Length: 119
Image (cartoon, rainbow, N blue to C red; front, side):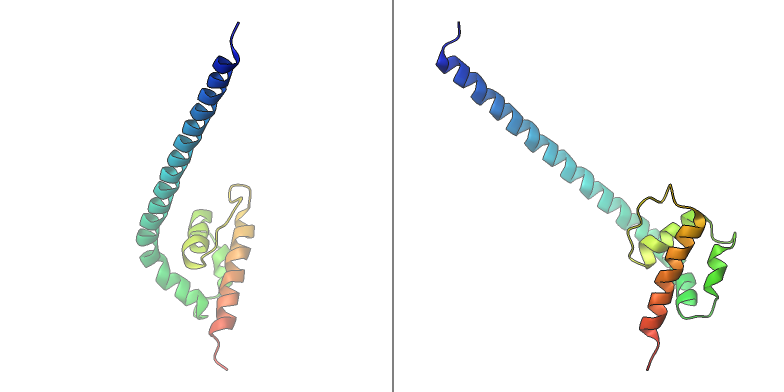
C-alpha cells in the first residue's frame, strides 16, 4: 500500500509533468505562429509589387471591376488580392466559389473608391 506522502508526491509529479508539457506546447505554437507570419511576410514582399499596379487600376476606375470575374483572374489571384491589397483575412476560401471571392474583392475596391473620391 502506498502512503499518503507517496500519493501526494505522485500527484505533484504529474502536475509538474503536465505543466512542462503545456509549456512545451505553448513554445511550439509560438514558433509555428512566427513561422507562418514570416512566410506571409515573404509572400507579401513577392506578390505586392506584382499586384500593386493592377489593384491601383481597379481602385482608380481605369479598369472595370467586372473584369475580375473573367478568366484573366483565377481564384488564387483573387485570394492574393484580398489578402495583400485589401488587408482582408479571407476564411473558408476552399469552400467559396470564384464568384463569391470576386464579389468580396469588388466590395473592397468599391469601398476604396468611395474613400478616395475627392469632395
